[in-house]
Image (cartoon, one colour):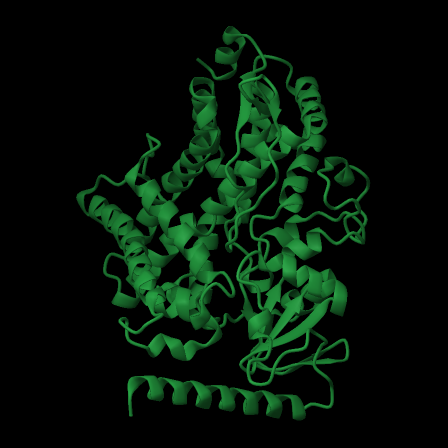
Length: 508
């Protein structure tokens, strides 16, 4: 039999088995599946699944079908949660059966992130990852890191003074310098640092590889078995290239720190502590150490870069919010000093502005998928074992019943006494859910606060101007991917004070 026929027969057989399994799962419960868009025989909703900006389509389906939606792809059930209550009731309250990850053929098996903290299946290894991560990122540990964050952000402000047009490059370097100092004792001193470039490439490739619907192999896993030379198998060549990036980021920084520890010259860092506590690790233990140290950057840096970029965009588009934040900073700090973490409790408008940054355009608009490990019933609907479960964070943050005037950037919504039903703090939904919540959330939140408060204390952010001195108003345009960044935009960043006062603030 020719390869074409063999592949075609396997494809049809796979589809038939999947459909029969799906029908059996539905029949074994007296409860109906949740509503959703109608699909086609065998294919289900495969042709309706978006390949980009999935959260927008899922939110539109939520308006049509409700907060809990069912679709299927070749018989595989998918549950989409557009309801804040459903996310809490299922991913939080029932986290024991909703904390697994589905197998993602592209990002997991082919590129190789199936052993990483974001995609590892729920079990003993996942628990070990999280135990190690929390040992370095617990809230009390973050307070010990504050001096590093404050110094790195002072360096960021100096860079803005010297080359404000390169603010996006400065953002990426600053976040990387904070994370790599903590994780590997590595000092980032220039914008084109090779380790930063490697890490950015890896996180970008992971974001593309794990985005739902971006690769057909995720919808039809049998495709992973076709040979590399087969027509249409370009995704396998892409996976091989991305796998090389992953291996390089996982192995090389860890090896560098390990060598430094052996020579007695390692600076204090999370990775150094892992090596020092276990001088003779097994192969599996060392693999866990590599992935855990890598997770510091891949799990938090890219999201922080996205949030900071959103801050600059929001300030360009909302000068009144910027003015109010700067008025508050002036009253609390006076002139001549930068904010510290000790000022945070006295800056309620800055705090509200940060909450609105998280809400307005969430860095992870669609949380990484969960997998249901046993049959469940919720709100009168049957949720079958093995279902892939997506939580649409963007849909929650843009639900007008929860956040009125949801399209507008309004920090004031968080200044009123908190109402559990209207304008709640978005942070419990911004960093993932249940036992898959991001362990680096405290580090990311602290970095965002310090950079926002420090930048606004020293600079005014306004629209860039064209050759006729007319303002160029950027359009909020967010790129696809698991981590969504605003598309490149220009702005004008100018000092608020005289040179002498600026240098006094920077401690020169």
